Every structure is written in C-alpha cells, then in structure tokens.
Length: 100
Image (cartoon, rainbow, N blue to C red; front, side, top):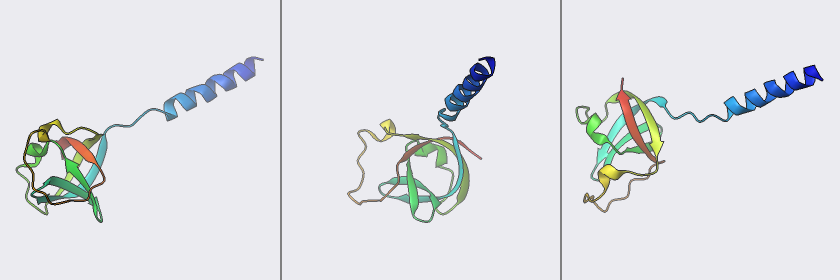
C-alpha cells in the first residue's frame, strides 16, 4: 500500500511538471522589415511579427539576432496605426523580452 502511494505521488508530480507551460523562447533569427511591420525569421520562411518592434530599432534589415521572446495573441502597440495593404505571411506574433 505504501509503495503504491509513493508510485502514484511520483506519477502525479511528473504529470504536473510536464504540463507546465514554457513561455520564454530563445531563438536566433534574421530581421525582416517591410511596410507591414518588423519580423524575425527564425527558420526558412518562418516569420514572426514583432509587436514591440522598437526594441529592434537599432538592428538593420538582414541582421542576425538572438532573442528571448513570448508568443502573444494581441499586439496593442499596433492598434490605431496605419499599415500598408500588403500581406506578409507569418506564423504568429511575438513580444521580444531581450536581445542577446
């Protein structure tokens, strides 16, 4: 009975920690800019729209950067801003926490 409780406890703990969400991502990518915004290309044709693009203002188009970021569903920094009508395919939006 004791060994069963220990086993169940261990299993529950493992499941609990395996479900934890990892928010911070560290990735190396290339800066891509056009009239629709600033993007980080992390793989071949996998662009992510940077919501807080001001953090990358000192970086040049095509420059490689290492970033720590979170995925986001809202881009409040872009609310009310006029963007061009061009379509830029992307995999989602990110908020950069730091540039390495």
